[in-house]
Image 1 (cartoon, rainbow, N blue to C red):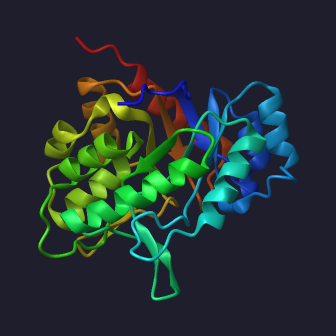
Image 2: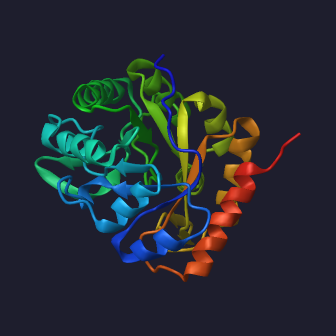
Image 3: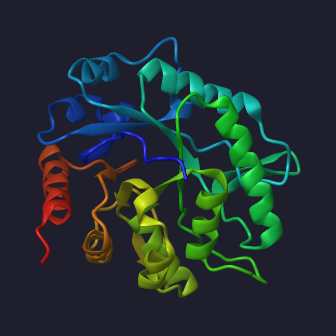
Length: 274
């Protein structure tokens, strides 16, 4: 198993152009994450250069590599992720356990991978191909599913554990997405945590969402909810991850509200547990 890389620590926030100045002045930000597809490696935004100048790690997070897709891997997308990681001097890069493309069409959404042996084999091959292109370690994130494919042969925890074991990849664990799986698919998040290789978790995502008509939507446009904090606490009780990051992509609140959410995440993450 590949040793865990030197990655972020503490509490971070997702950098977005709409809140670039906010991120610069927020207290208690230890690192930031950027959507790789939003950047050109030869023309990084001034705000990111400012943050890098302060010594903050800036981590690229991709949404379009479609590592779980049955079609040939779009190497150009992985190359873009690699170029952004290199431009940022990032210690790692990440994408999702999902597919976003099929039949030549782009879904515009992160779609779940069937948890079958055959689908796992395709995912493993694609991850290995991506790792061969990237110049940094790759972390993979669990998604917030709205549906599950039939005839699953593995639980989500076992699926992700075997994926990490066979590829040496790391986990970017999203606790809000675990909550989405609990609501939408009836999964027990505690059982998932019990099956995951928590020593492979390099950092954690936490985001807000909303439940409508029994379906949880991972909006990234609402405040953090109690179940997300509870899952972060449960994870930290098992094994404290090195870092946790707040995601917000829309309906941005005031600086004070964002600062309060960061402080609340830090309180849970740093809590002493006996």
